[in-house]
Structure formats: C-alpha cells, structure tokens
Amino acid sequence: MTAMLEVRGLTRRFGGLVAVNDLTFEVNEGEMIGLIGPNGSGKTTTFSMLSGALRPSSGTIAFNGERIEGLKANKVCRKGLARTFQVVQPFPDITATENVMIGAFVNTGGGRQAEAKAREELERVGLTPKADTLAKELTLLQLKRLEIAKALATEPKLLLLDEVAAGLTSTEVDVMLKLVRQLNTEGITCIIVEHVMRFVMNLSHRCIVIDFGSQIAEGTPEEVLNNPAVHAAYLGEEASIA
Ligand SMILES: Nc1ncnc2c1ncn2[C@@H]1O[C@H](COP(=O)(O)OP(=O)(O)OP(=O)(O)O)[C@@H](O)[C@H]1O
Ligand SMILES: [Mg+2]
Image 1 (cartoon, rainbow, N blue to C red):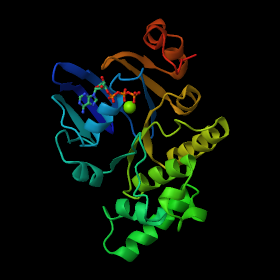
Image 2 (cartoon, rainbow, N blue to C red):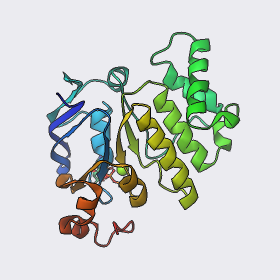
Image 3 (cartoon, helix red, strand yellow):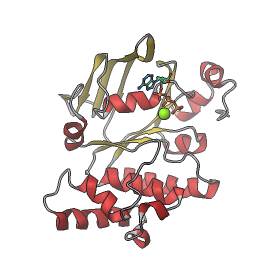
C-alpha cells in the first residue's frame, strides 16, 4: 500500500541557511504524526512546502501517489491537503462564518452553498454560538477553532496543524485535544506541529523530531521522549520536552 504522503529529500534553503535539510518521511492514511523540534528547527517551513506556500529547494512530495512539490497552494488544497497557520490571522471585521466561507469557496460554487458549508464546519469545531460574531471579538481558543474550521471547509484528507494548542490554558488544551482526536476519528489524517508536549504526545501515533532542519529521531511518543538526542536538542528550550 502506498503511503498517503511520501516526502523524499525535502530541502529548503534561505540564502546560506538550510532551514529544512533532506527530510524523508511517510504518513499513512489515518495516522496522527507529531512533527516536533526546538524553535527555528524548520517545522513551519516544512508545512509551507507541503502545502504549496513555499517551493522546495530540492526533494519530492507525493500525495496519494501524485507529485505535488512546486504546485501552487490552491491546487494542493483542492487535492485534499490543508494547513492551519501558527499565527492566526482571520479577517477581523467579518464574522466567523464569513471567514470560514473563504475556505469553503475552494470546493463549493455559490455564496449560499459556501455559507452552509461554513456553518457546518463551525458546528464541527464547536463554534456555532459565535457564528455571527466578528472575528476580532473572539478569544484565542475560539480563533484557534476558527482556524481549524477554515481548513476543514476545504475538505482536507490530510490536515497540517501548526501549533493549535500554543497559548491555550491547560483546560483549553484539553478541549483542543478532544477536538483534534474527533477529527481523526472522522477520517482526517493529521500532522501535528506543537511545542505543548502533552498535546502532541497524547495525540500522535508516531513522532518525527527535527533539529536544525534535519531529522534526529522517529518513533512512538514514548520512544522519542526517552531518546537522549531529543533531550539534547531541547536543552535550554523554554518548552522543555520533559
Ligand atoms: N522566509 C524566510 N526567510 C529567511 N529565513 C527564514 C524564512 N522562514 C523561516 N526562516 C528561517 O528558517 C528556520 C526555520 O524556521 P521555521 O519557521 O520553519 O521554524 P519552526 O520550527 O517552525 O520554529 P518555531 O517553533 O519557532 O515556530 C529559522 O532559522 C528561520 O529563521
Ligand atoms: Mg513554526
């Protein structure tokens, strides 16, 4: 069986800096993969390349057997690969529903259809009570829910979650954990980038650890947590792995 996502030798340079260095990994359908590493290790850059926002310097990305590296973000999105953004940036002066409609336009025709889709996704992430609230009036947890709803509205098979638990209180992390687990039960495969270890370790079937753009470990959450190389990479980090 071919993997849903096959990444081979993925590399991205910014001038002299190698932000992502020769990454090779696979993600199978239904899996929850944690992609972790210290600040600046190349996680968001990896997501940007997978989602078509950034062109790889070299390497290949195959999604459901089809090569997608270098494709524009809207094309990648239509194939069923969506991401959330580390820094949530909704349009502040329109409602939650209208923000999600922007994602819904990817696969739906007219405005009414997109609105129905948006309301459906808001329901799915538990944001129905705020459907008609302006985005600028939402709390951080609600904004994170909105960010996920926007991605869901594009009907992803593979969802890249970039720090959806960051900045949340412990109770809110639990709420988000439940939501993401629910999405997986509904058939969505996820790659989870996260510094909140409790979140990513609870959700992931398998973790990939990167440092300075290169993979340094891979295994079950327990295996990577017990890996000395992983501890060394996180030494001095604010978000300690322990
Ligand atoms: N557009 C860019 N131009 C130049 N350098 C960049 C650019 N984007 C990222 N970088 C650099 O590439 C490296 C990887 O950054 P990236 O944002 O992928 O890290 P990250 O693992 O997501 O970090 P964090 O955990 O802090 O979000 C960093 O050194 C960063 O400064
Ligand atoms: Mg990042």
